[in-house]
Length: 250
Image (cartoon, rainbow, N blue to C red; front, top):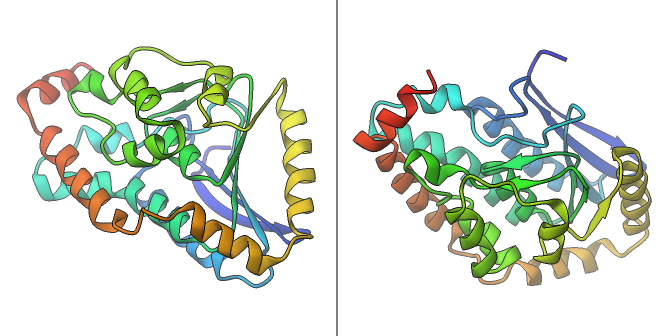
């Protein structure tokens, strides 16, 4: 696979939303926009009872935002738009009336951790180590922070945000509440996701919708909150510190 995509497949009333980018599933702005739109549309599709969020490929689940786009930011407005990409996806997931089950097959960095934290029930393999690397380049996980803190707690979120060099293993993420189950292989993960989601499809759709609404209570201000957080990152990415850091990656 070489061409980036976002696609939706419906199998047995389960909507599988899959994204892919050849650069370790890092997500440029156009793919993030399409992903947010696909989640919203799937949430309104009466043929779907439960959603699964997954990525293509066997290794990395999501390496975060597109680094190529990041290094080309030259003004505050562009920076805010860039960092709003993950904010829009997280808000789409939050507002979606259907349960979203995460299928995390491999390493997850930055914005990818935010996506995993924004699912309603997240299943992973032993290879799904997580890292928040933003502080390394002079910014921080401002946009994804609320989603990660909501799922894992402030202590765990601050630990991985400050220790920006380290990958934390999937079992640690399970202990902190990000993952519900950790499997030895992708094959076992896929089998478990299929069984779990198809069983959910036997439940009352209205009951699941009401439960999701309750789970996300207290996040009603996230449209504004995440936009404000995107503006912080957009400002910091223009700092002399970050510009010098990014020169080393060009």
